[in-house]
Length: 382
Image (tube, rainbow, N blue to C red; front, side, top):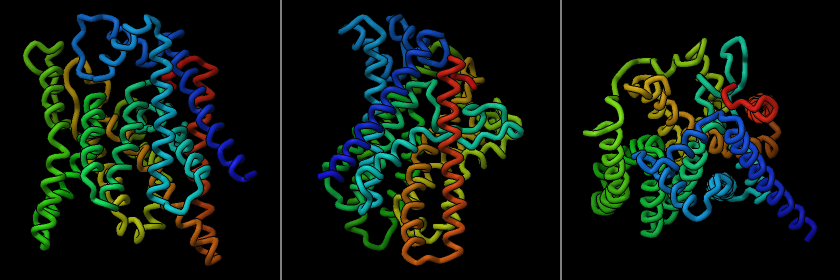
């Protein structure tokens, strides 16, 4: 009973803390006019604005219920809390013997962590380093929820192949696409590669059924993507922008050492990839999240959105979203490696665990310091 009480106390405490952080972040953005939130609110209140994002229309609906920005703050904070819960469920699906409290702690860390901050390499904590722990964009916070939910159903599909999981994934990806398309573009690319593998594999009858199921999952999201593209770049769009190939343009935005920014961002996942290579390459979720991240970085390295949003570096969002999932799944593999090390007591493995733990702690400290600095400076762009 005591252990159960402690477990639920930890879980409730984590959810209260992350909810409080989210509320304070959005309050700062509203009060001091920093971050993307104020412009999103303004766009939602201006009914003449035609926006590609589903969030704009959710904001408008909420404002018809209560004409106060606080209702949107509470909605977004609820999304953050729910995102931590779903991430914890994802972790429990990947690491089946993990304790509930441990899963929630890892999920909380995933939401907090940021790239390791080295001022000599890059002056910003979250810009120019593909940070997953950015709070200035409510859109990213909501998409992180959908990433965890998408990966959760992906794991479920691989475990039991039930129709309800395919339907749930299709709905999740469609909603995620409606909010911001970057997640679905990265997820869909690897999902499509996996579908083609089933199409051309030897077990033709069974695998072609899976191919068809995979194909149907992607249809709603593709239709939404086409609609969004027409809103953003079609006839009557607000600007003459588009998508162009411009190598390393986004990577070089707001950074001093572009390629080192990738190392700062992925230090812990890259280390876990090295020490757990065999386990990761045999794991469907390990291959999938790394595949998503590679796709995200290919887009980030070579594509650019032209027009009035060219300086926004919007192709960075795919990396920020995928890096969140990669950090979470990497913690799962590190947890497994740590268990094996405790069991076998191998000296080399102990040293590697210490190094991995140090990198993990560095990411976590970077995220905590960023949040603290925002609270003190009232500025999101640091």
